[in-house]
Amino acid sequence: MRENSITITGKAETVTFNNGSYIIDMGQANQTQANALKPYGMAYDLVMNYKIPVAWVIRQGKTFVFDDPTNAADFTYNGKNYYSSALIVPAAYATEAASVVAAWQAKGVVVDQMASGAITLPVYGWITTFPRILLDEANGDKADTAFFTPLRNAIYLLRYWNTSCTYGL
Image 1 (cartoon, rainbow, N blue to C red):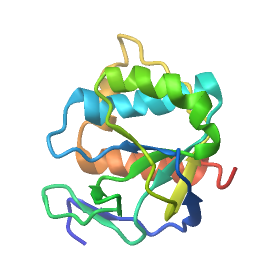
Image 2: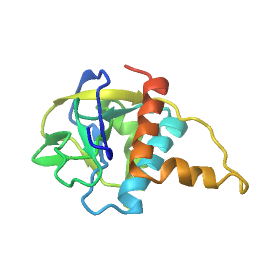
Image 3: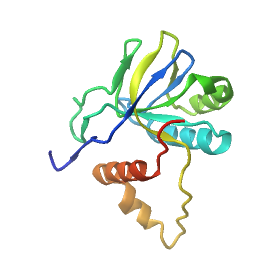
Image 4: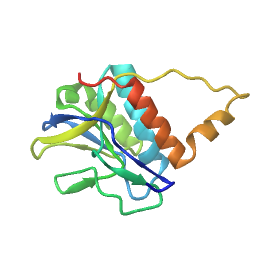
């Protein structure tokens, strides 16, 4: 494994997502605050304010190479490739999530609603809660060193999901 890469080796459950499910696209080619950071805000909003679980879908055995634009897609649906994992709101919550999705789409988050048949995907974990943290002015630099290098960020996320995700609904 290269120094600037990480391989997903955790066990995923297989889940079938039906028409009506929302796919939050995390892998836009031209990353912006709206399409790369705000999806996490959307997930937080869905989970914490509406109690809607969100699936984290990532291809098993995937190796993230942070300077390699040829990373393989996690999955393809309706002719579109989804890279950098995806977050999915199951169809059972689509009606409840519709207004939240629309509000975040207006902020630039890329979300596709499934309408071309079911798809079975590996779910690395279900996001059902978020940790509560506070960084004040004296400790704000800790966020910079913890989160703003790609490898460090990926390792943190994997450690968090391995200890904090709830598998299954």
